[in-house]
Length: 395
Length: 182
Image (tube, rainbow over all chains, first blue to last red; front, side, top):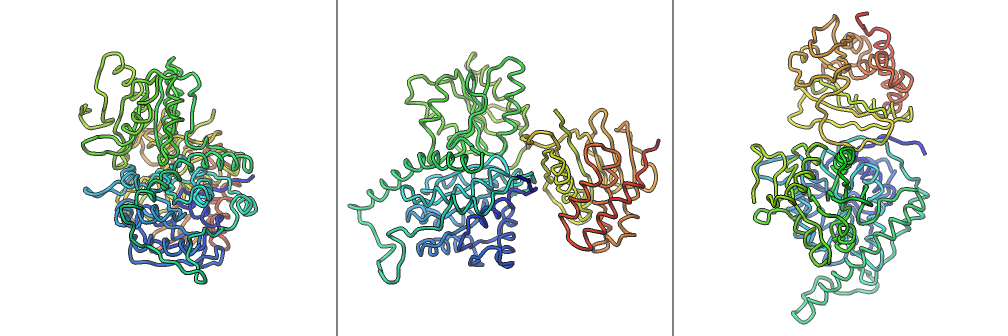
């Protein structure tokens, strides 16, 4: 199939078009803006038959999607950073109301100080909102993930919104040759949206958004958790189905690179997985049996699969592009939590890196793996800041 | 394995970001893989800007910054004194300049008067000659990695009608006029 050169943001727009989305509501913010500009263009040219709603804020963008999704429409929005935080209240609403909205989040650091560059704190700040969170590595994966996201979200066993995360600039503004699936392929894979029993129907009116007293609220939350558990299975099934149709499989919840015989694993999320893989190849040339575990999905967190892969490893380095001040690493804590209950667990060391778009190279990933192996032997620090000026350990 | 890194150094408005994308499209037409990306910062019309491309016979997975490119393409010779990049050993500099520029950091230096080519083809936006397609045309002459015909195809895919034609013409003229100093 011939390849076309697309940026990550263009790939999101193409994914929205191929998914025949009905309603798009969005507000501009760097580095997301070119996604909705492209979609507005598709709608204007008649290439996408959708209602494009210009709103005055991200909060309203999600509110519009919630209303439209409750009426049975397939909805899309996109945002970044401050825009996502401003949207926050409605993000929780969409998750709790079980509305299968798909949102692209072009990951960007949070202010202050102002930064337009990539890190993962924006999306991770909403990790408990009841949204599935997926993370892409390449422009091709961004495109495929958009279509897969709708398929997972609308599955009757799931009915949850999905956040498709792509790294600001590193993916959003990077151009790569991409295979674009045909409309026929996507139509077969993703049929028209079927109404769920609770969607607004004027001939069968119900009351929405009412209060749940203490004797019912917990059951709603329990069902949300059960849907997340089910989503983990559905994501694997959908990945397999996409693979049968296009030849492209990403491994479902985890992508494993050279992990079969690995003694040490490098756990990462997002586009720098490619730099991590490069580092693994160099380490293997030096005789270090290392592999990459890329988390493609962080909600539902792939605890079981992660524990089973890490079981045979002596050590794991977790390189996190976010900070939870006082913890200090979101990903490190979640990985450790996943491994804790397993009988055999590796030594785990965490690294904070790449905040606010700081460049992280294969050499840095190599250093992280070597530092982990060394800390395991000599009991060094369990958390380290990579590339910090002065190179100071923090715990 | 083939693997090459390219850095475009230009002023905002000269088309360096589009140049990187056109180059990746051109190499992908020849069955190669690539990745084009800008260095975002305080980019404004006239301010120094960088954009980059990686070219390989396999999908490109590395996304960290390029520090030592094989090819450095400078759209304004006044920027040569502001270079923060050195080219890799064996690499080259291609500059937009009417005469041989003085570059100490590279063994091979090529030059082409892309500003004159852009002006004579009417490629001027808001008073700025847009030299990107001419610089790419010159590149295809001095670098065997990509052919002029794939570049022209890439240009014609990017712009339909007259705009595509004049850009393709600018690329071809630069291909013929680039100076190698030999």
